[in-house]
Length: 255
Image 1 (cartoon, rainbow, N blue to C red):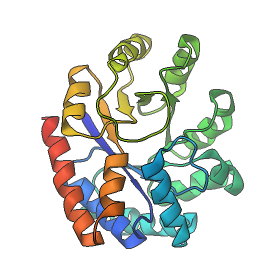
Image 2 (image 1 turned 180 degrees about the horizontal axis):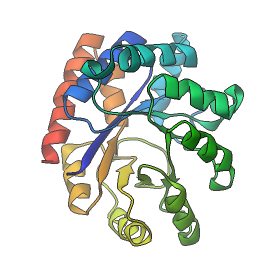
Image 3 (image 1 turned 30 degrees about the horizontal axis):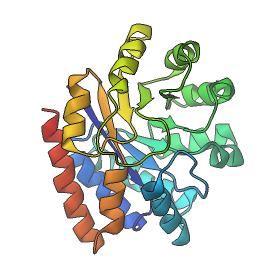
């Protein structure tokens, strides 16, 4: 079964809606939910997620608020609320600001089980890996179409939980179709590791999900399309309804 991994930006349109969105995504059969911490300089993100982060920060969303919302949803109300794991997507700077060890302890106490840091070079992940493993947080590493083979092998061997294969060069965002190059990259990674591989960046329609699933991926990550629905809806309630319909259509494409 191919895992469905949706991504949403924390605090867009607001944190109460984010909390509801986590429940909607969970109830629609998501296998892992990626929650993006809004950041002022999101280098890996395209216009949709960048705009969502800007709106969220403009409303005053900060790390502590996101954490207390998560603690409430995951820890205090345990399983009836969320049955699938939540993984944080954070740029490196906010982690360094807190101190790596402290950051890991805080997110662990909030019930977070995974972490992705798109802008940290492999050479600098040693402390991150040590602290995440100390706190039972799976540190998922990313490999891209331009990653040299030797480095790709080091990344997949160090990545925990699964390997995140970025499907295209450039930033996140919806695309018309998924590059056929992904199939070759996927085969290369599969030769280097037995860990599951999830593909993200540019996956935005049920057809994309079906296509990459046929290529043999273990998980699909859908971000910008989800963020757009929530961020551009007429009202938060409308956004949540659209999110539910869209997530169900993605899940159905994987069955």
